[in-house]
Image 1 (cartoon, rainbow, N blue to C red):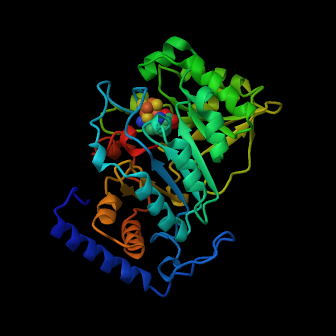
Image 2 (image 1 turned 30 degrees about the vertical axis):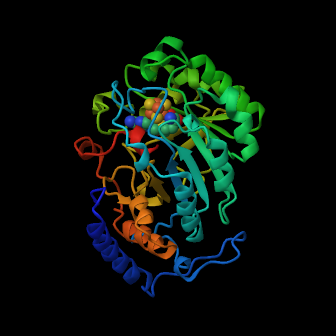
Image 3 (image 1 turned 45 degrees about the horizontal axis):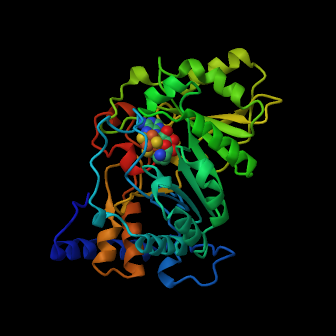
Length: 374
Ligand code: SAM
Ligand code: SF4
């Protein structure tokens, strides 16, 4: 892992080692040329090799954390006292972010998801959405949010070109919601979801299941899909630094599925979508669907097409890997687009075929989720 910040000379040396590694990778004749996307008119030489790792996974999707700050304190995501925040000048600026995405888009990235922390805390979010949408090759910019401010801000995001929303909601009961998020807000989130549906957004609801806490609400969430065209996704609780994870709190996806099947034996599996992290089902007659994200008990690493950029400008090739490369430092020390692309390829070369397994992950150092961007 690059320890950052680095002194200038040391950074230059590391950058140049990575660049050499990347050059070797780029000259590998076995790597097929990138298929040009319709919307991309000119692709520079350095971008013509697809963003593929050593396990044949092509990466066209980037999750971008826009801030480390949040207006909630969800128990599974960060410690009660909050997470240590980076100094302002360590965060990627909007221009640096746009440049990074332009480089990634030239290499075949098509889909972006804005996340955080809480992305709606950025007062310039509508400008970010607009700018990223205008980058050649980018086909969709969507967002994961806690939904607290959607009733006020969503029309502006819609005008800026936001494509879809994932909204986090772990309980349909006010007191419980407040206990989980360590802040109130259920009514606002529910109103935000209704507005998103009225405006025609595709909406997914993220529910982190925790045993003994909200697993008795599984059927309430299934009921919630009866009249609303949303996809409720039950997510297995994952271990990150400071979230007191242990496997007794995990609700395996098979347990949640069994609970639903007991009441709805007619539940139907939906056709899997490529690179989807969720297995999706539908109760016949319901407007919405239910999905399961089983990162712990049945991972989906073999189809992973994702990269992550943290708010402080680090590239993470795996949610559960603690290896990071600072694109921010490379940009600030004068790297050109080709050099940035080489850094990305070198990082991707180290992507493991799969994560370490839940018991090992529980003992690994990683950022708290709020500092990664889910
Ligand atoms: N603040 C936004 C939100 O809550 O939607 C975006 C950032 S949040 C880190 C992104 C997603 O990560 C949320 O849906 C949240 O439920 C999920 N998440 C955070 N910590 C998690 C954990 N330990 N296990 C599973 N999912 C987690
Ligand atoms: Fe904030 Fe989202 Fe983490 Fe909750 S899950 S603390 S809303 S970043």
